[in-house]
Image 1: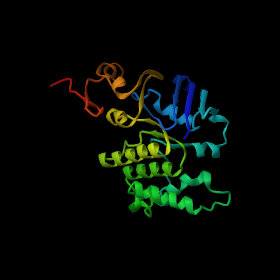
Image 2: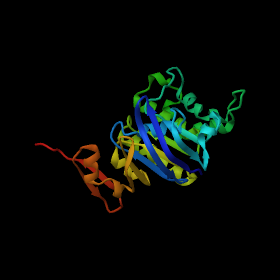
Image 3: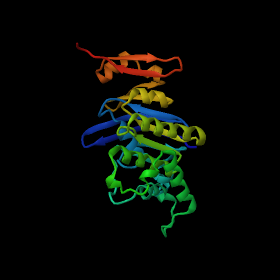
Image 4: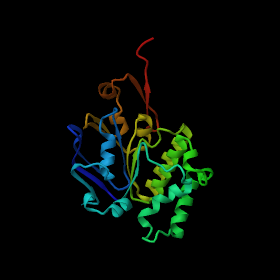
Length: 259
């Protein structure tokens, strides 16, 4: 179980500030979901945490700045599911998922029985056995996205970063993937930070939401606190109805603005 803390995080691309002054602490086992319109800075926070873009400020795991860790140690701490991963077309599904075990495989490159068992377990939990021997290049976008999630889970890192993890999945596989992530965090204290466009799914699975707009946090809290019609109208420019179910689920439904 690990905590993830951001202090005055900033990310800049050329002259444009993607994120300014982002400060938050994600407790061990907590799920924070970043929401907001396109260009709000959600992916930049995840990419900075994964070490893919330079940043200012501090990102710390268990109180220690992650930028001081080696690449291998960072991979042992943080697993990342990008929006559009580069995947080798000629690699089989199980070989791709096995890449998640790279931080634990020695210099001679021989995987252990535990490595193979972990890959088998993740493939089974995500119902991916039919993809195990197929080349990645023959798979649909949704099948490839499920493999990327499987690779990240096989990494066994205590912190999981998900950038639009269900964007290419049908509703059944969306639920399957998110339920597995949720179960792992509850059973093993997995700390999750995700970026999602589906506001209902974000509120359903995350403990807290952080609404970003033009690189700044404009609202944070539970789904009931953040997913308010007036707030979504102001920052998304949409007309929505927000339903609150008896079990606490918050459902966001777009409304037509013209006949």
